[in-house]
Image (cartoon, rainbow, N blue to C red; front, side):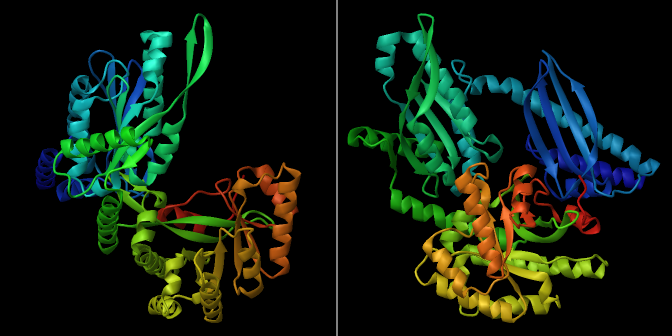
Length: 546
């Protein structure tokens, strides 16, 4: 009975810490650990249609099996709370099962209450004309972003559609309204809600979009030409909607949500007067401020060991497809989801933090190899990415060797992967580093190998083991593309490189590449990037079956 009382104390503390979206705190994590619960998510259905999915708790990999708790609400609203257990979780005894039943009932009620409040509370946050969020939502959401450690990763754009006065004069308000609603739908599809992005309809032809700063160029491209289909006098026609926007990066100078919107509004007026479609507020100062703060957030995450390592297998296809090696990839768990590198790597490169991440990954990979070796696993080489910025480090090779040797890891089990550098003198530095690493017994891979003159020149001097070609942009069905692919593979292998094909989308393309001489693939058709636990399973079962 003492255990149950202790669990109830933890449960009470956990409910008090529930913010309406996520469970946090040591008490909740401790209780989930005792019950072997690794993930909790919920689904809100309205009239049988899924309208929202939320992950309120996650810690590590989950078993594929789960338990659902179904709660019927009012007005056709149904909420399903799903509980996953840890992989290889032990079988519960009766006392733990009783505790789990109390836990699930209490947590389910807590989540359901929050979701119902949110569902009906959204009525004050939705623009009824388009179904997008309104200004009330903007102020609430921006305040949350500004209070989070990720505030410096977001930008805000005040958008004004162009030419809608003329559209209204020619076709009337009904067709104009339909065009605005269709534009609103496409804007909503553009933003990634799961990563905190959102779109707001202020009214008329004015919108606000808050997105990750890394997507600004994509937003500008999107806003330059949005196609909508309209109908007049029984005939359909296409209309291209374009827009102008005033944009600001959210930074430390912003104290309130009105500060952000005010800067965007001022910048939009400047855009109108200057005839420019997209204008950034204090572009140089804001960009510097934004980069610096994001870099601090990333650096702190590395220091606190918050990055996870995923492994994407490379498969050898001579005989049965078999695990050959794997590439180590950094992943950043935040806000209940795993953040892929494309959301933070540009900031890391520009600030120089990328070198810190690279050595962190190498250290974690060596730790994993050491643990797997002690556990008796049959190991394969693991490759770590090193950005071109590392080539400026005159001690790069010795720093890499020191980490590997400090963990007493066989150097043959570690590979270092570079992309072809794009700065002056980079080829010389890469050639030198590859030569020294090879002499130390470290496998070297060159990723994203291109077709430019520098790439072909590099082949003459480069001491490396593997070349990765990304064939995602080349079509084997095109006779010219097929010739280029086959000749690239043939040339590389004649020079002593092993070719690894990336970006292969179909089994048919893989079979065609095999006929051209390629026997190594890094592709989703064989395997996706795997968490450490799932990669352990692949080490145990290295042969792929259809």
